[in-house]
Length: 176
Ligand SMILES: [Fe+2]
Ligand SMILES: [Fe+2]
Image (cartoon, rainbow, N blue to C red; front, side, top):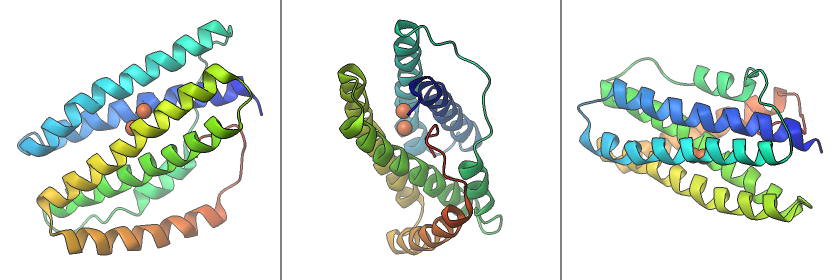
């Protein structure tokens, strides 16, 4: 496992998480619950970005180019473009919830298997944070849509995601 590639990829995942939360706030500024829930998440994700940079500096690793995230690109294509504004909000939130949930799973695996003790502890803390973000996005979706509708769409997205995963190249240097 190449720790430099993992950390660089991870740094950009945190940057994208912060950027996407800001995008959602700008897209749905009138949705108080969304704005109130995601504002602190932006700060948290940017804190994660800074924490990854710190770990990189300690190891003399330079932040290089950002790669295209095929998993996220494909998931974004699953979003339905029809329906009401709150339907759109649900699509946005459920895709983010999925990305956060998978990040939490990946951090769990990394924390359990990485030999570097500092990074193991770091990834354990991140696992907890990203699992909470997953809950945040589900709660926002449920705030503006009936719970049953959110649950049904979640089940559909899991099936769509499984299809995406079947066709994705498996790489050990990436988060997704
Ligand atoms: Fe994060
Ligand atoms: Fe997150």
